[in-house]
Image (cartoon, rainbow, N blue to C red; front, side, top):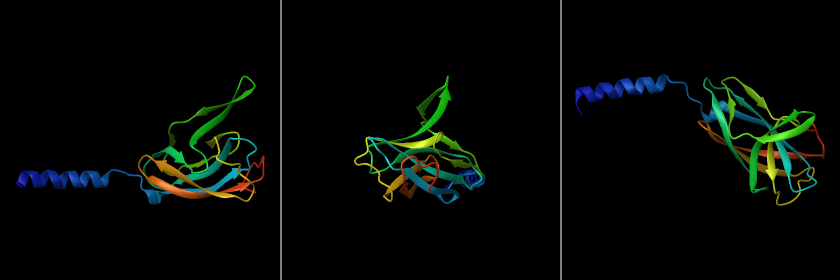
Length: 148
């Protein structure tokens, strides 16, 4: 390897090391909970904190309790509540995203069985830069507005 190549490698290594990067350890998934379900669909809620110095994005969610799991946003339009699928949820450095009823949430579509109060189930959240985080969701009563 020539001195020129070694110089480029040294410079490149320094530049890459100085770029802010989101790491799995920087991302914290907290307060994972769900409401008991009455039908084929359910909703789960989590709080995600990005304690790093770089932004990241939540790009996927999965759970064995349902074949279709995705992030949705509820909103009111013209007096009617609506939902839309969110393909990627940005989480800035130092930002906390709280998913809750009536806002951002995780839809569990075509549940394999109803979610009952006291149940627990695994949930995987995949981040663009920070990898996949696993958490356990606790199911609370039907219509719960917070994890109680």
